[in-house]
Length: 510
Ligand code: N01
Image 1 (cartoon, rainbow, N blue to C red):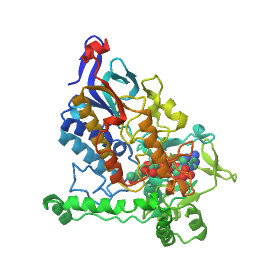
Image 2: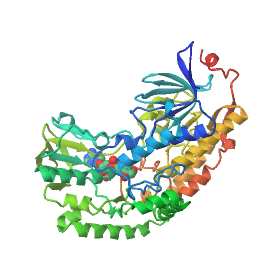
Image 3: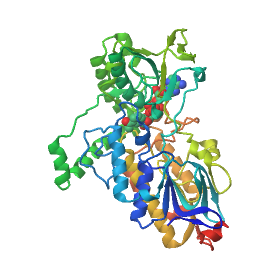
Image 4: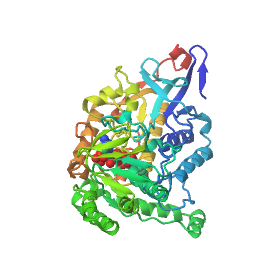
């Protein structure tokens, strides 16, 4: 078990997991099942759940059906409806963590400040806001969508009212009767705007929604599970697994349209246009919300509430570009000034330049941010990185999805990581990193597969693309193909080094 070495005051552990969201929690549970008990999970927030703990904005719900947006090893017969609300998903992660008996090794309210590879000790030396660790492996589950991106708008810092990001909702601010502005119309905004609209309507408030680019939004086929269904999920053997498989097959069936035949996505566009016509009668507003790029190029959103909300009397959709923010208003390029009391920025996250990369230093003394800054994010099988031994990245480059559940990807990666750990133990390996050739071959194959996808050809700018114009975010294929690639730890694609002569932590760290 983790222990502080008296000489160095460093806690030596076999595995240090960063983040207690779906990814970090799965890693902890599966390591434990594999007999690897010596780990810590460092979490900057106060509880498990990751994005589902932090994102508490009104209306936060999952847009992937919960039957699939849950662990395969912890099915939940009690989901209240097809797409679960944030609170329910967060409670699910808490329950899974408690049931697995891993929480004694979780360290909350602690941030990872620095992780540097020590080649002699064959350990990562990790500095956190509450102490030092020396870990044989670092498994990062820090999340692709965790660092809020604030918009760079002239004068925004001079705004005198309340301002907050959708992912850091300030529940102390009473919005009743206020003049509120929301910047952004992505997945978060389309969930929170309809909720705010209701609050403001009943209290005489008003909202301006600033849209830079419209999204394709299809109807949300939502419904609650009945008591009979829940009882059946609980008691009829195999039923819930079959329901999960059906959702998986349905979503997976859509992948080829995104990855190989984007023209098929015209069907989605007509569904979306019907959604618009049903809720909006004003032709000018209809035109404003209708995208001009191929559906799927940006994430396809699902909502029944968005169009009615922006068509309502107490909401204005503003499409003129924002010129500046003043102490009490937003001014658009056409010179119109709209006074506000509260500013909500729903402007997304740092995805292709993850801030944690600045704090990870590899074998050659270079930070991951430096290495990725040269040509964009890259990792072998989205998980391991040349020059960064024993570092495993969950939800790494080209692992995110536009069509299905990230939990499937997370579990695929965790299986691979656990197999790597087993292999290292069995073979007496102290350090593994993918060869430069293996990583380059993987990356070029992924980028080749990216060429015909809608994300490349669809005619939009999206957060999937990095500053070089490459999609280093999404997996350009079927999820089962990803799982097959990661089915076993392929040590032959790695530089491996035998465990150093001083496996004793105290000696190594002295
Ligand atoms: O962020 P986004 P999000 N001035 O980056 C606009 C997941 N998620 O938090 O499109 C004006 O999608 C920007 O405009 P444009 C999901 O994977 C899941 O909404 O770049 N506007 C856009 O409209 C999702 O994809 C759920 O032109 C500015 C918006 O801000 C991801 O999180 C729920 C601007 C940002 O949209 C991110 O979603 C919620 C500026 N300077 C989120 N800068 C589920 O249900 C940015 N924008 C699972």
